[in-house]
Length: 183
Image (cartoon, rainbow, N blue to C red; front, side):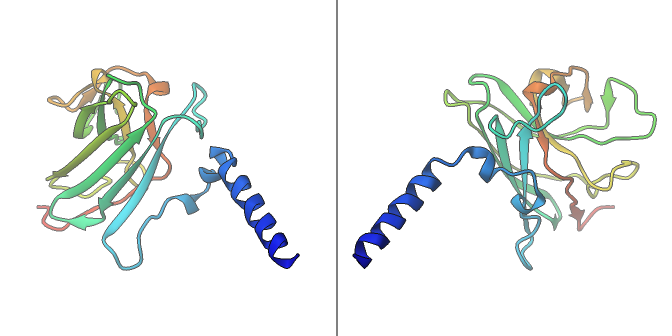
């Protein structure tokens, strides 16, 4: 009887975990974002889709950024999921400067790629920013990292002129990065 009870509880627990909605695992709290892993230089940031009212869509598109918190280059690895297959996306730093009119200037592009047939995108890179994040003059306490449609941004001029916010992934929290050889 005791063994039957243990098996029954184990089966019920397995069924409950398998059928839990995605929102349980993507709860709106900072505990989901491992800002730093102990004394490691690695940190993580989750990016999520937002609706037209800028509310997170927990069961929508999302991505995870792994990055180095300090170094001579901003080293990162990003994986995005549930995106539009065949669409081109660019991972960016989006600063807010006092009086910075539209089209927004001063954006930094990290990498771009096309979402595959499953709606996934993988970006990896090492960018010499010659600056910390957030950059000087950014009025935020940290850096905004977004995944945007490549058609909405001009990486050559560091400007963003299109705005399709329901197609982007937005940071769950700001990040900081220290450029160890910035001028």
